[in-house]
Structures are given as C-alpha cells and as structure tokens.
Amino acid sequence: MKRGWIGSALAQALVYTFAATGIAAAQTETGPVNGAIGLQPAATEVAQDIANFHDLLLWIITAVTLFVLALLLYVMLRFNKGANPTPKKFTHNLTVEVIWTVVPVLILVFISLFSFPLLFKQERIPQAELTIKAIGNTWRWDYSYPDQGVDITSLPLSEEDAKAQNRPFRMAVDEPMYVPAGVNVRMLVTSNDVIHAFSVPSFGIKEDAVPGRINETWFNVPKEGIYYGFCQELCGTLHGFMPIEVRVVSKAEFERWVQSKGGQLASAEPAPAAPAAPTAPAPDATPAPVAPATPG
Image (cartoon, rainbow, N blue to C red; front, side):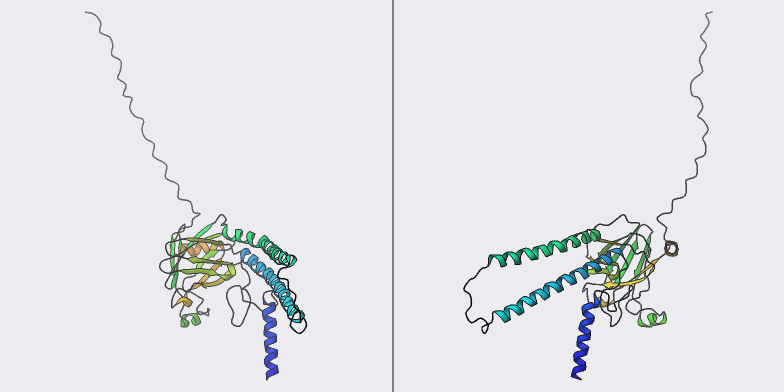
C-alpha cells in the first residue's frame, strides 16, 4: 500500500512537471475539464504568446531553482561544522557579490525581451470591427452592441435546462455573446455594482469590471466554436455562478443573429434620400421699362 502511494505521488509529480510543455493532457479550448491540468489550448494569437511565455518562464525558474538547490547542498556539505571545524573570518567577497547582482539582472533583462512585446500586444487595441460592452451585475453579465443596437442579458442555465440541452452546467448561459470569426473585437468592460472580472482563458483576456470606470481589452478568434469563461473576481456569494459563453460564428450567421435580435448591421448603408421635385423658376420681378412721355 505504501509503495503504491509513493508510486502514485511520483507519477503525479511527473505529470505536473511536464504539464506546461504539452506532454500531459490539458484543458480543451472551450473550457475546463474535470481532472485535467495545464493551460487551456489557445484560441487566439495573444493566448498562444502567453502560453509560450509561461513555458519559457517555467524553464528559467526550474534552472534557477536547481542551481540554488545545488548551492545549498554544497554549502551544507562543504561548510558544516564536521567538515570545516575552523571557519573563515571574512565577511565580504566582492566577486560573489558582483555575480549575485549581475546575473539576476541579466536574467530579468532576458525575460523583458519577451514580456514587454507581449504586454504591448495585449494593451494596444488594433482597429476594431466590432465593439461590445460587457456589464457585470450581481450576478450576471449584460452585453451591449452599440453599433448594432442589440442589448442582451446573459443568465446561467439551470441544471435541468443544461441537461435537457446537453450543455455544460454552470458554464452555459441562455443568451451567449455572439462574435464573428476572424474579426478584431473591442471589449468595453464595466460594472453596475461591485468589482467583477471578465475572463475567457482561451482568449488570453482578463479585464476588471469596475463601477464607474470602463476598461478595454480585445481579441480575435479565427476559429469558429463555443468558448467559455467566468468572473475571476470574488464578487459575492454567487461569484461562481457568473459564466461567460462566447459563440464564435461566421459573419453571415452573426448578421442573422443581429437581425433576429432586432438590431441593424453596422455596415448597412442608409437608403438614399428621394430626389427633390424640381421647382418652377420664379417669375421675373424686374418691372417692364416705361416709355418716355412725348411732349404735347
């Protein structure tokens, strides 16, 4: 029994060690999976860059940790009381102090070469083709499409409705947020009451919803599908019941959805105005010349 427990612990440690490199089973793009570990597969370019940066940091911190562990073991074995009964009397070592200052700085500079461009890509919102305003409420999300004139309220499905529709309980909602595939979507995030957080892990976005303030983020999902997120802020007793469901569809299907909600396509041009009826020319108001009077 004890041997089996040790073997299971070692196997679990190996799974966690290699999870971030993709060797272990990870989540799906659409949402979490019971018993799975690791990051969700990326659905956007930004999310993939975040995953790559995470993997890079994992290798760096692993190397640093092993190096520090080796130093600790060396110091414990080389400079313990038994192996070194007469300790040295010095208190400073210039070479060592320079090394432990310069090397961490170089490591941080190397990390910044990857982190700063990623931050720039996340924070710089490109030209958006669609704008959506997400409003957090206790405890639901409201979505507004200002250019299309569509407003929806998104409530989580009950367990009975989720089973009846064969959809994931506590993840699916009655009114999902629709976006077209391959389009830059600009998200305006705010709240009506307490602080929430709009997050879709596979998109690589997490933006705080703060009352009285509008925060911005963006995403572009090239692949159609259903993606799930959730509120990532401890916003109250029903914090765990604020799911986010995003349906990425074709542009044609998105247009049909907008029309089904009574909205108008932002790209639709207004009907041309009818030409004005021609008006009759105004009569000449110039008085006729009067003949000069002839003398009598």
